Length: 100
Image (cartoon, helix red, strand yellow):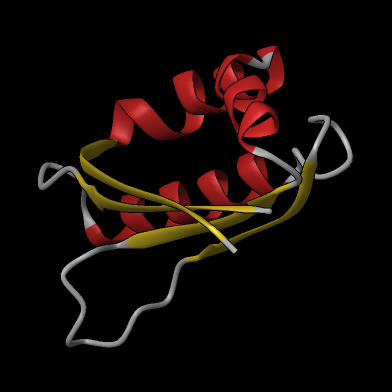
């Protein structure tokens, strides 16, 4: 099993209200990939960090294998979600993949 963790910071140019909507849209877009992407066994987007956080959102996903993770990266549904809901609104992205 492979864990795929992503942390994002949203763009500074977004208002507080826009950030709320963007977080909701990212959560909906990415969590809707459950049951769509082969080998994706779990996916959760955390949008409510504590004030001590320096990231705005976290993706926590689990894959059956490293090959499944590679397939997720290029899966059309994931690419569409990333291109429309995530990338236009984020300024930084950190990733940690590891075996569990």
